[in-house]
Length: 427
Ligand SMILES: *Cc1c(COP(=O)(O)O)cnc(C)c1O
Image (cartoon, rainbow, N blue to C red; front, top):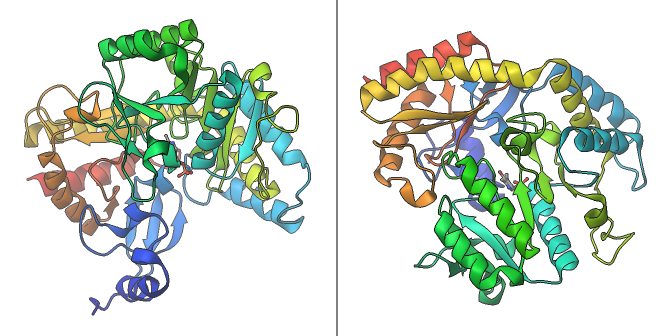
């Protein structure tokens, strides 16, 4: 049974061939209930579904579309590249150009390797860290997401520092046991862990702007401590900049914080909407990768000419348009309109924002800096707000824990529409 919309009919058809009707779980609306809308077109800041309903989009494909949907210059570059062949399995000029742009923009990166997703970038960067250090243990922070790499699909047990417990079926306990999980923003737990096991740790991975569990803005001192402890113990610091890279600044969170990691991973924005990931670091680390070194890593479609063209064109436009200044101004405009509405509806509720990434914190008190500080009942409130906004043509992420994104295609008028809808919904 469906409600007769084309979306509902298509979803019913999808469920016959795709688990849950989707290819990535959050799209199924399980966190908010209801039926997802099947999309047929995106242009600029707007989406249109197969029933002809239009939305101002603040999901932007979960981050990649920093120029908006179907940017005409990116589309033209992709069409031109596609006409010259979809894949060569051999070096191409576009991958060199994108490599030059990434290494020029990001602090401390001499060499970069392209892959096809953020998950693949993280998986490969950690293999490299282990290969370089000869150590097995990896430290991650509770609330940070690094893709669906087996040994990072772990949750904290009880206690301050714990060995990871698999958070997904199918992850062997011994894999999860190679990962230590710490709370974010806890300098004491971090210091103690390094005192006890610092010399066994290959790498510490962190989202320097944690944006997969709300937006958990970190204190700079915490990141500085992390930099000092890893350096002192010969562990590598890995910034997972799959969301923040080329989003919060040209040089990502490394530029914003002034802290240079040993390795960094990228995805989302650097593919301009095509499947691209990357990881990079200092020359002597990256030269340990095959074909120069003993750490194996490969990909049939890595450095794909069409995807590399989309990424290179996107980064070219971002630099030309002084995108980060414009996005910050747009973010300020969003905050000025949305924050007072949230605050009026519930004291303490606020808009948390880093540049063009935003999140509605619907709980009283200081905005959370650790996953453990997010109040569960806020998710209930979000469900209602999400559906009422969607009815009014505003597309936010279908989960209380996911952030929103602005793009260069958003205007003050789109922000006004969001604010007007939110004012109605909250009253
Ligand atoms: C999205 C994301 C990933 C995973 O990237 P995919 O392309 O979805 O595999 C990894 N790390 C962070 C911080 C992300 O936001």
